[in-house]
Image (cartoon, rainbow, N blue to C red; front, side, top):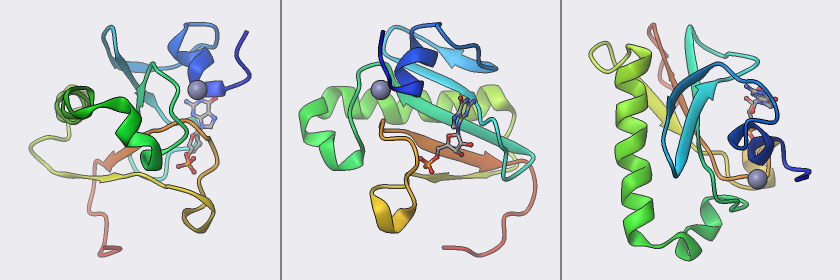
Length: 113
Ligand code: 5GP
Ligand code: ZN
């Protein structure tokens, strides 16, 4: 059994509030939301962070972006707008060492970036 929390969620070993799911990716609501809508997009293949994207391949990386836009539509924020963030490494405060994007939205987000 994997020690990685996101691998375990992807395998269905730990429950999550799933927004979108296919063979390669899963999107589920963050346990500690920072905005009215806060969804995590995770590839089912374990990669530590965006820094390992080369190992993923261009086609899979493209499908992850498309899946992310579809997950935002499923979460109901495509029209109102949203932000996609990927914390990568210590200075970004990455807590879970499995590549993921945050989709945050559901209200005005302010001007962080
Ligand atoms: P990071 O700081 O690594 O970019 O973000 C990790 C995110 O995963 C955090 O926002 C945290 O709330 C979320 N998280 C950590 N463990 C779990 C979990 O078991 N279930 C869900 N749904 N979210 C989690
Ligand atoms: Zn993992």
